[in-house]
Amino acid sequence: MTMNTSQVTLATIAAHLGVSRSTVSNAYNHPDQLSTQLRERILETAAKLGYNGPDPVARRLRKGRAGAIGVLFSEPLQSAFTDPASVLFLEGIAGAGEQADSGLLLIPAHPANEGASVVQDAMVDGFVLYSIPPGHPFVEAAMRRRVPVVCVDQTRIGGTSWVGIDDRAASRDAAQHLLDLGHRRIGVIVYGLGPDGATASDLPEPDYEGPCPSVSWLRMEGWGDALRGTGLHWGDVRVEECKQNNIEAGAQAAKKLLEFGDPPTALLCSSDELGLGALQAASQMKVDVPAQLSVVGFNDTPDAAQSDLTTVRQPLREKGARAAQLLLDGEAKHDVNINLETSLIVRNTTAQAPSSA
Image 1: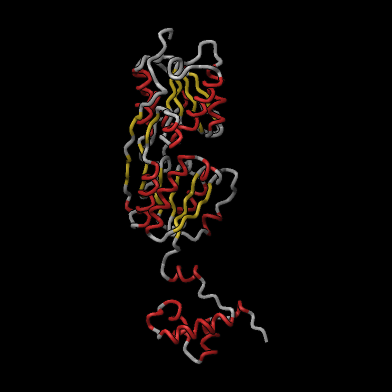
Image 2: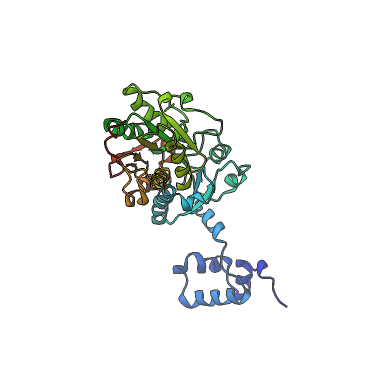
């Protein structure tokens, strides 16, 4: 008679060997409590009966941990592997998780995903909320789980820890750099202001006591701070909003801006990908960078350094690592705020404004 292997349990093996169930369990969970000969006999019998060992999920739950960090992020899953900034951030989480024997569960909270049951059912020890819009149903589902939660970037929830940068101040420094170089005809290429058609003049003041605007809005605010200090206003700035954060979108936006009869002499881009796209468009249109056009990005990804792009550097790997460490060290619920430092990296895509400007 062939035994159904799905029905084989520790008790089945114990009955075959004439030992207790706890003895069989010790062969898997506490081998030091058995002689080598007995443990080998138990494992051999289990293999013959088709038993592959205790359920690893159940074993982890008995230990009080799932062994995984859930990462909720606002973009489609593909961007986790193609967007350089996201890749570096996830590398930081993975490195910290590896040291604690924890894996990663990536859950994209993109609007295309309906419902939050995947968050409710996820086998994780806690969640890192990576720049998810305030009020998103996935955020609410994560909070209902009552597991540790660490917020990153625009997501801020009272009573939970937060890791991020001062996007507004960092962007202000980038814009001020161009203004100090004499640029007054400035264009902006930005990703993800929102689906409601909002314009730069509609920007709200950031609310640091609760959920704050997206990082793109905060960077727009920083640029605006610098512009107002020089007597310029958003009405003096041409803004191109991109629906995707990639080189192709940046190139298309830059081309539109450079085709104006009185084109900008400088472009502020909310990411390095958009900035690299602007450089690509300038090359195709025979616009000299930086003699005729200065370009500034944001993040300082490896491609930005390779292309000699002036940009704002933020510690993306450290951001991920610190978020994971807060979660794994039990500090997630202690309302710890970690504001990481940024720096303006000036390279060869910015120069004095053309004299004709």
